[in-house]
Amino acid sequence: MIDDDEDLFLEDDDVTVGLPRPGVVPVGWKMLVVDDEPEVHSITRLVLADFVFKGRSTQFFSAYSAAEAIGILEQEKDIAVILLDVVMETDDAGLKLVHHIREVMGNRHVRIILRTGQPGQAPERNVILEYDINDYKAKTQLTAQQLFTCTVAALRSYEDLITIDANRRGLEKIIEASSSLSKTRSMKLFAAGVFTQLSAIVGAGPDAILCVKRGDVGRRDREGLYVLAGSGRFETLINEPLDAAVDAGVVVTIKDCLARRQNVFSQDHCAMYIQTLTDRENVVYMSSNRPLNELDQRLIALFCDKITVGFENIYLYEQVLKAQEATVATLADIAETAQVDADVAIAASHETRSESLRLAGLAERIARTLYTWRHFRESIDSPFLELIGLASMLHDVGNITVADRILRKPGPLTDDERKVMTQHTVRGHAFLVRACGMVRGLTYLELGAEIALSHHENFDGSGYPDGLRGAAIPLSARIVAVADTFEALVSERPYRPAFSQDQAMTMIETMAGSRFDPVVVESFLDVMASPSLDEE
Image 1: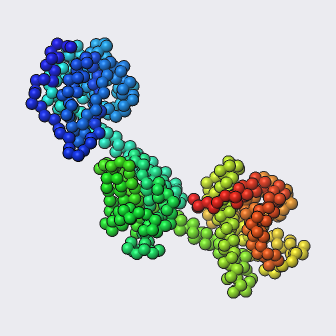
Image 2 (image 1 turned 60 degrees about the horizontal axis):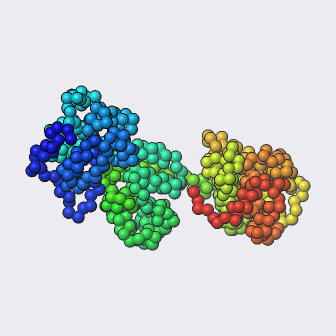
Image 3 (image 1 turned 30 degrees about the vertical axis):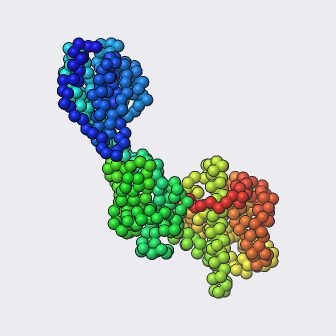
């Protein structure tokens, strides 16, 4: 031992340290003792054996050289304090280790208390100025009380640095999340993004649920609380009444949050109240696998405050889409039921709308399957997938210019009638192109114009109006041609009964390569063999 080491820590025998809180099993502060003298390790552990700070005891690690200390630091990333000897394998091994920790490992959080038995070898003023340490003590001066004081000060500093860093990272995640979520265009995906970001911000793995209030919370009917989206054990509860789908404890917490109109936090869960600009009320409930501390709660509250506008934008966006869908479906109705007796037209319009919506869903699923298979990546992107369903309903808009006696003729068309009929593609295209002039960028109107013109082109070049062949036919039209033919085959017509689904699929499969793109047909058959997909 170095001279006077027998007096190390022993000058103040009446030192007292914090006591553990009753009933608490603390997670220890990690402390690393780096010294080539085994006695120093033993005495340090003895003096701090009962040390407790903020309800947490100490967990010691020992290293007898700088190289050994580096190995421990690389394994244990959350060491709070290092008690470090200056002179070990070399006269400046401790100082070099400080430089390695700060500059090479980039660890700015761990607090370092330098101890030396030869203070003259490394003058205190120079060491304090040149090295990023918290304290520098001669071993003969470091009494038990001083060690206690230095350790508490170091832990306070470490905790503050960790809190500041967690706050910074949390704010960065909030900014990143806000940017990411602003690109989302459906409530389901938006909610999933909210859950993911909340989990990342607080570092927990939650089960989460998003609820919306539709009227009186106390009523158990369509005007009560409904689930918009969920994750974990709540993942399948979409558009379900809250009372019927979720356990009573969660329901009580969510209703309490709504009644108080403020966030509710507990040890293992929280409920965040979100009110949009149009006074729609939402609650995000999240369970956590660890206690949520004060910083977690502040970050969660800030995050939910910042995404309020996102909820409103998604809601308004979905309402616009529904309005567009209703408008397009009505236009399809008009095109199919023009010049028909009013009572018959009303009855026919309901069936037409159902066919149009089925057609839209089928076209979108075919496109998504092609995208999943990585086919036609130059044509299929996110806007295409978003627009193809709505645009497909406009495929026969040109029928509004065709006389009903031709549209509904039970027998074969004459040559003149067929010539008139083929013009519905050109006229529908022209009609939609004029509408496209009122908006900018790719829209369902532009894609609809493309489909309206080319959905009767055949893959082998025998179709109309331009006799296009193969890849010259727009992909959107090739997709809708299959979906439209299937819907036509399984629907009753004035001149024939409906075919069964299996019959229709077989007929379409036999026309692959002549009437239809074989790859699109393959995608169609895969879709028909799969269970219905939830809307994204």
